[in-house]
Image 1: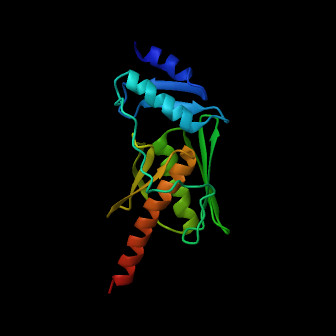
Image 2 (image 1 turned 180 degrees about the horizontal axis):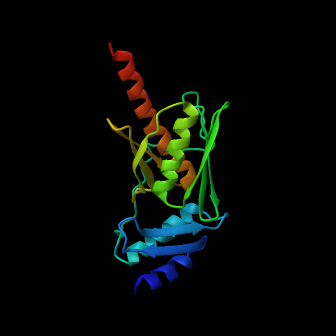
Image 3 (image 1 turned 60 degrees about the vertical axis):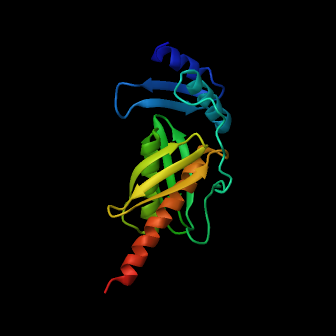
Length: 193
């Protein structure tokens, strides 16, 4: 079965509005656009089952790491005070970060890397930080979304469960990773002569 068959099978997953597969480009892959009321956890499980059938994933059930709490939206705590919203729009996503005083948004392509970078850019703007580069973002067999960011000197990673939704997981993972970069930058400035 070629990519046409795979696209058809992907579009048969309940909750998937549109699917594309590009295996020829290095930045390609499987892209899914979900229906607004889709249960993301169910879609991810059906996608995993399909990838098992295609021989891309192992058949064993993934082990869930319960030591990492699920993120919640709006993602706000005393340390960050940043609310995050990710909204699908025609041809992409609108990514917004806001504090009580500053609000910033980006309209980006509907790819995990573009959404993560848009979130990092908006987040850094609302907290008054130099923009941070997103190195990678992905979901593992353990149902954790992991985001890795870099400030050009160091890299930091954060992870969050996707069970409550990929938007919440991305916000949680990015918050953890960005907090590490910000803390490192703050301590480097404090120690400088």
